[in-house]
Amino acid sequence: MDDIEVPQYFICPISLQIMKDPVTTITGITYDRESIEQWLLTSKKTTCPVTKQPLQKDPDLTPNHTLRRLIQGWCTQNASHGIDIIPTPKPPLEKFQVLKLIKHLWQLELQLKTIKQLVSLAAENEKNRKYMIEAGLPKEMLVFIVTCFKQGQIHGLEEALGILKFIQIPSAETKPILLENHDLIIKSLSWVLGCEMKNQVTVKSHTMLVLKTIIEACTSSNVLELVAPEFFKRVVEVLRSGITQQGLNAALDVLLEACAWSRNLIRMIEANTVFELIELELSFPEKKTTELILGILCNLCSCPDGRAQFLSHRGSIAVVSMKILGVSPKAGDRAVLILSMICKFFGTYTVLQEMLKVGAVEKLSSLTKIDCASFLKEEAGEILRLHFPEWKDSPCIDRFQGIRVKPRLREIEANVKKDNHLCGRLKLLLKRL
Image (cartoon, rainbow, N blue to C red; front, side):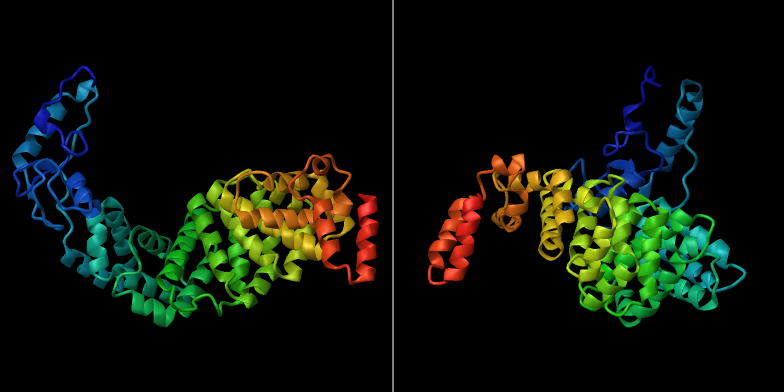
C-alpha cells in the first residue's frame, strides 16, 4: 500500500485516512462522516476544520455519493496491493427508528432481537448514542433491568448493561427516575452481580460501571446510605473473582463513596473488605487503583474491627508501607494515615517490630526530611515521637535529624516544671537517650 499514491481528494482532512462515507458540509468541504460528526460533538467551537466557518452542532451533512463510488471503485481496483475494499455505508440512524425499536423492546417475541440491534447501533458511533439518549433509551434500559430482577430473568441483561455502558445515563429524562427509584435500581444491579451468566467478567464490569454512573448522577441524595449488607458482599465477591480494570476502579469508587456512612463501614468490614483489598493491593495494581484501595482502607481502619481485620492479614503493614513515597502523593498520604491509626490504637510490640522490619519506620523518617505537605511531615513525626523508645536503636532513627527527640523532650520538660511527677519521668527518659 505504501507504493500506491492515494488521490488527495479521497483523503479526509480530519483523519487523513481514505473516506468510507464522504459527506459535504454547508462550507463545501467533504469529510468522512464519522470524523466530522466526532469533531462537532467533541469540539468546543463548532467550526469547519478547514475553512473555520461556523457550523451547527447538528448540521446537515450531504452524502457525496459520486465521490464514494469513485473511492469504492479505486479500492476494488487496488485490492491486490493491500487496499481494503470499502462497503456501501448504512444510512444514518434517525430518531424515529430508535423510538420504533423501543416499542419493539416490550414485545416479548422481538425483545432479544431488538436489544441486540440496539447494542450494535450504540457501538457504531456517537451520533447514534445521541439519538438514543434523546429518545429516552437510558430510562427504558433501567426499567428493563428492574423488570428482569422482578421476574428473575437473565436473558437480555448483558445487552442492556452494554447499552448503558455506551450511552450517558443521567440525561434530563432519566435523572428523576434515578432519584425516585434508586433503591430498587441498586437492588436490581446488586442482584445482577450475584447472577451466573456466560460472560461473567463483562457483565459484572458493566454492572459496576453503571452503578458508579448512577451514584454520580444522584450526588444530592443519599443513594448508598440504606443499602443492604448483601450489596457489599456481592461487590467484594466481584473484587475477589476478578473483572476488567475499568470495572475494578468503578467498584472501588462505589465502595469509597459508601464510606461516608458509619453503618456502611461496619457492613463492609463484615463482608471481609479489608482483607480482600490488601490481597488486591498485593497484585501491584495501577496507580489509580492503589489510591482508591488506600482511601477505602483509611476509612475502614478508623473502626476498631477494621484495624483488627487489617492486622489479621500478615502482609498488611508491608504492603501499605511500600506505598509511602512509592506511588503518588495521594497514595502516600493515605498510607501514612493508615499506619498512624494502627500505631495509635494497636501499637503493640509485635506491630512496631513489624514496621521496623518492613521499612515503614525508615520511610516515615524520610518523610520528615523531604519536601512534602506539612501535615504529612507532622503526622510522620508524631508516629516516630510516639514510639521512639521502641525504635531508638534502629539505624534509621540514629541518622534521623527531623524529629529532634531530645530538644523536644527538653522543651516539654520546661513547660511542665510544676508537675514534679511528670518532670521526673521525662528526666528518666532523657537519661536513657
